[in-house]
Image 1: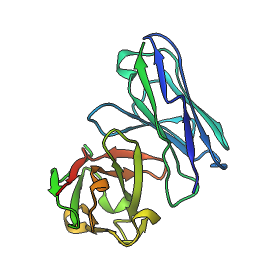
Image 2: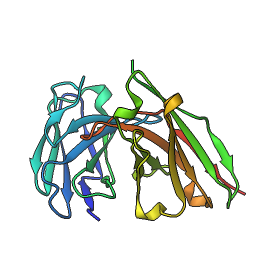
Image 3: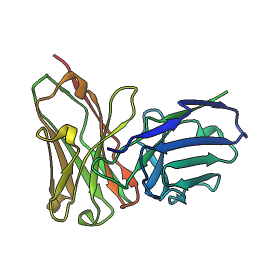
Length: 108
Length: 117
């Protein structure tokens, strides 16, 4: 089973700042990695698929990069609505389709 | 527009079975796999399995093998997830999610299941 490790667990930033979230896989997942955003009381929302492609309707301030075992989700300039929990998910070697443990992005 | 609507919250006793429904609309139900994901209180996301609504084929996480059954009724565009022999640590929000083969593009609203004696 592929293990995804996200870091940091919590990231404290201010609106307007740049956020960089990391997801590391225990073995290569090629580019088969997705990122999701989840706000309290809501279902997750797909942000990025295949490591670097924005899903429909996702603002351009969100970008993804990486391949193999190291991946990054970047948010160029934080908006108030971006403060949430972010999860990565590998879609390369399944079952299972594993998720990372999440990074909480909080307002500083 | 695409909608995925789940059944309502449930309270179950240990040892009982759970059945959650997931009704899809606004797209061709048989054209997309449906996955099930759960989230325990304050915890992360856990993948449970998928069903191919076209063929009825399934694939389950090993953790749930023998306890989970995923089915569908194509006549009403609805997927079902049954989890048996419930334990207290099955308390969670259960989600169904439409899979685009690249990620989950639509999610149900979640079904809160509480397992308590």
